[in-house]
Amino acid sequence: MSRPTLASSRRRIILSSFCITSRLIKTISVLFLVAIHKPTTASETSASGHSFSEKSANSCCIDHPIHVWTSCGTSKQHQEEQQPSFSSSSVRIIQSLRAGEQRARQQTQPAQEERLSNFALATAGATATMVGDAIMQPMDCIKTFQMSEQGSGMNIWSAAKYIFQNYGGLPGFYSGSLVYCLSDGFAGSLKFVTFEALKQKFMSSSSSFLCAAVAGLVYVAAIVPGELIKQKLQMNQIASASEGILQIYSTSGILGFFTGFTGVCLRAVPYTMIELGLYDWIKKWYTAIIIAKRKAQENNRAQLTPKELIVIASMVGGIAGYLTTPLDNIKTKIMLNSSKYSSTSNNGPIVAIIACARDMIESSNANHGGRRGVRSLFDGGVARVAWLMPFTAIYLPLYESIQRYMLKARSSVH
Image 1: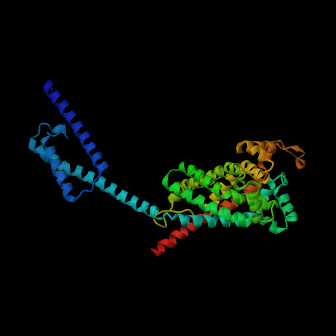
Image 2 (image 1 turned 180 degrees about the vertical axis):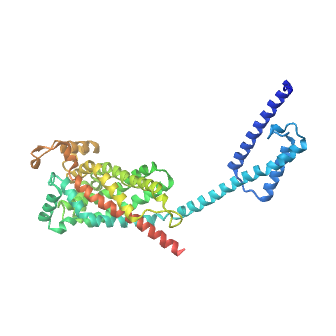
Image 3 (image 1 turned 180 degrees about the horizontal axis):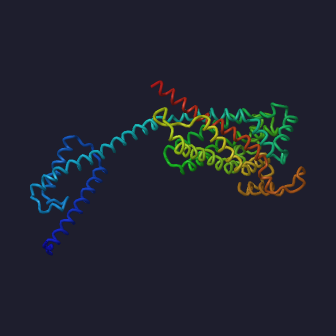
């Protein structure tokens, strides 16, 4: 047996290098075709296969260097047999990608068409907000009384008993309800329209919290006058809404209706960020983890059930409500004691907020025998959670249910 000469060894190394280079070129070609995946007809596919065969025929058996000593005709025949597998595999990859894109387009296109108009979103938001306000108005009245100086330190039952005995019985729990429902309904409509519009523009999980913050600012600008009059009615500081409007205007002018605006911003913006942002994030997470495993029943997309929406909304409302209780306390005390903090507010709203917080922390309460400290910041916290958990469990799922009803009605018309 003769040993391979140096020339034959070099030839084998060169041919092996050509083989590796050829396979790399084929791989890059397939990836390039997959990347562009232009529509390919049958004639184009056969033409491309034929041109590839002609090009590959010029190479000398680079796919299989073991046949380097075979004839050139055999090499051409071998590569012509191998070429259809390459063309068919690349075509199959491209066709599967096209099919996947078509399915994705069919699933995303209805979602884009399903967005309601701003007027419809405003109607849904206002209706859901006013229904929730009307149902939970008594608990809101108890919470406001607990946060006032008169009811500071009282528990829910003591505050409810005092309101019932001193504010005209059961109707006393609904003082200012009409004004607040109308103002909060209007503010809620703007909040939801702003949130949905921004969320549609910035499609990401983290952006939901920023969109909710902007929606909270819009909400504050619309709610402050109605919130101010409602709280004065609840505390019997005014007899009617018209009296409150005249009193505020004669005392402080137009700017008087925005007393406590900064305090409301400090309360409403973080609350709205937690409420809408966390609610939207939990829905996406729950859908991705659990609902995605179910078979879609409508438009090839699974939806959360009303019970699941209620549980998520109530949990979010409780978390957001308790975390923002100190801010709500400061806002309420500034609104109810505007004369007390008017001198400090001249130096800026932040100074009034700090002064109010300091007064709350340093104040002593006879029911607790002295200084209550930081605990006073959470006065009415239990009532606030007891109010917001059912409130969010009512109005957020109701808002989505109204949306689904409107979408179904519109699709039935078309």
